[in-house]
Image (cartoon, rainbow, N blue to C red):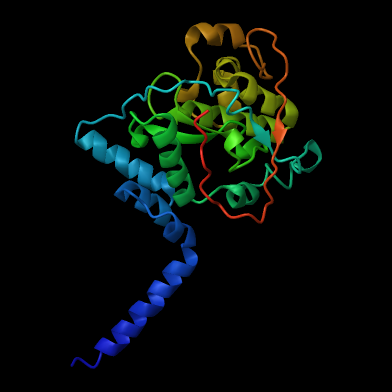
Length: 261
């Protein structure tokens, strides 16, 4: 017998133990596809880029999922963490480490996406969907409360990347003092598409170093050219009553049971 074999076996057992201890979420919610496995082990951005590049090589493009571009406000009214206030934004949403710590693990996100897709959109491919927090973590939203979760299409006119861009801009505006936290939360909860059209001007994007590809359509841009503060919607509407997160922080990232009605 090779004298190194016992050492290799012991080393393998140790490495396996370390992997399990550092990836418990992956064990609890096993990946269903290589893409999910990559996202659970590495930075999800690298995995998405690799998948996109591979699809381009194979001349495939993301498909537009037949799902609403706005959430059902009865199912997803928006939920906030009441501990995050205007007074502590410098320690919370304006601190990248805080946002990273509040972000659920990729395995939970993938498993929740599959669960919601199976219940709400059984005829859609989950790979074409993205799980979104209506009020994002970067604006004090609850990370895993199902009243703050909905599924968006990755592709199409009103897609997940656009909402991510709006959330980034609003976070920068709040952290720079140009917008209050409450106003930003209302903007995404009330009408994220209308807020996108009003806020995503070339000037705002340039001011915060964000990609110009996120700019709103030209006809909307002309109306919002001089606007520096986002308006919740093109027409006056009643404020959204945002509910408070009720789950204790110590609770684990369990995949929620998604009600049909």
